[in-house]
Image (spheres, rainbow, N blue to C red):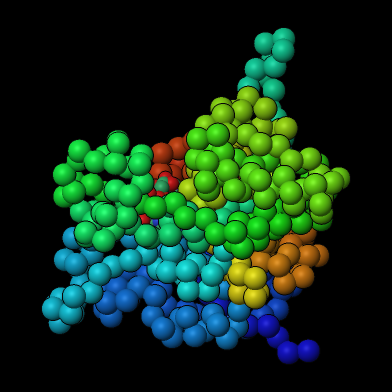
Length: 397
Ligand code: NAI
Ligand code: MG
């Protein structure tokens, strides 16, 4: 059988360091693939005026599976300033290549697992009934709709007459905002479509079924955001009743969920939400299992294009250190999600076991696990570098 080709997109800042170390781990675990590198990120914006060049889209369309590090994004004005001089007259406007990737390939399903590793010094702890300290084992997977809702990009400031008139035709707009001068009005829409709402709900239920979770929790706000959250809730009830009667459907408002996750995080299994609330609740749970150094994610389309990435960004302040200090685990775990996706589950199990062994042994810890402030001297002060952490994982393999 011919080897599979994976597109690697290091991106900016620490993206390259964590991706390079992850490829070493994959190799050591016996995963065989050819890798082709895809250009993405700030450098390509500056040089070419496009942070997501067409050639990268073509590579992903061809090979379907991609590992992605992280990119740097900057506000509009700064983005313009940093453009190559010859591009400045072209009227180019920066937009995030990650959002671009999601929209281009309709990577509508985003999964973000948050699972406690035993002995991780960053684990969430709380007081038990008798005032004792308890460490709940969190095992949650958040399914976030990845392309619609508040991130759909349908928004206006000082909307033109057509849009304004349409808004004014809504009695609540007229009553609550009709007195505001149009040039002081900004609108960001939250649009949900039935088809994609159904797709994310079903992805969540399918995952619960396949991996034996007893519940799916919808985290929206149907009592207030009646049209979008309300539709999602109604559809969830229907889908659960007809196709997943063995799995419980829980309905928790997003605000209440943010409280419950610090009280009884161990009670939750699969969580499903729209784009913005999914983003929020996944960062909330990630905080309980160690934060950005551990938070991994996968995003995929119905036709099998998939991109796997840590949820952290490019951490530019650490990017120029001679020795990279950041934790590669989030990227390594994202690669494990890739292995699950392409049915290399045994290798994923091996790597996850190696990660768990390193953490439980507690000898090798990156600066975040030692609760140090991230600085160039952390390695001198006993923290493992990115490479040393990967070496420790490889040694366990
Ligand atoms: P960030 O995630 O890059 O860094 C925030 C802080 O988290 C860091 O300063 C560091 O203390 C910690 N951190 C991040 N990754 C870590 C790791 N692997 N190990 C240990 N500690 C880690 O977010 P920030 O500073 O808000 O954004 C920096 C740049 O990244 C911006 O340009 C932003 O737009 C971009 N960004 C890109 C994302 C992506 O590529 N998916 C996601 C989030 C931000
Ligand atoms: Mg986020």
